[in-house]
Image 1 (spheres, rainbow, N blue to C red):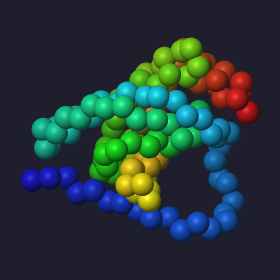
Image 2 (image 1 turned 135 degrees about the vertical axis):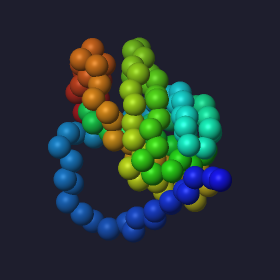
Image 3 (image 1 turned 90 degrees about the horizontal axis):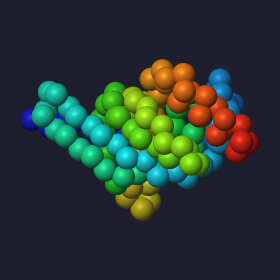
Image 4 (image 1 turned 90 degrees about the vertical axis):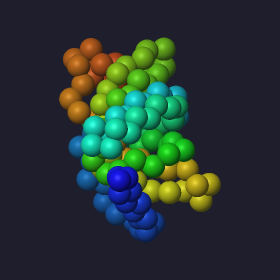
Amino acid sequence: MTSKITIMDFPKTESHDRRRYPRIKSINLLYYNFFDQKEFDKRQGIAKTVDISECGMLIECGYPFPLHSILEISVALGEKLISVKGEVVRAMITEEKTYLLGLELTPLSEADKEEMIKYIKGNL
């Protein structure tokens, strides 16, 4: 049995930004680790961020993930490497047949949160 993948296509419309934290466009390499206990599915790979904020990120990768999947991520922010967990809250497919995943980050350690804020403020 396989997990159901839901790909949502969001129309390009002008809308109000309701985000609580500033989001910056930033391309950073990341390593992800995923394990689905129900399906015994394990995936690891490399992806990149498209944009990033204190509580979320948009990543581009070559493989889709079901909504609500939890990814363990190590991402390079400048010279620092931080580890976070993120829940897939939206997914889209691009014209190039890659996947854009919107991740909501679980609470970060205090040290990683400080590094994230410092990185974002330094790139505003």
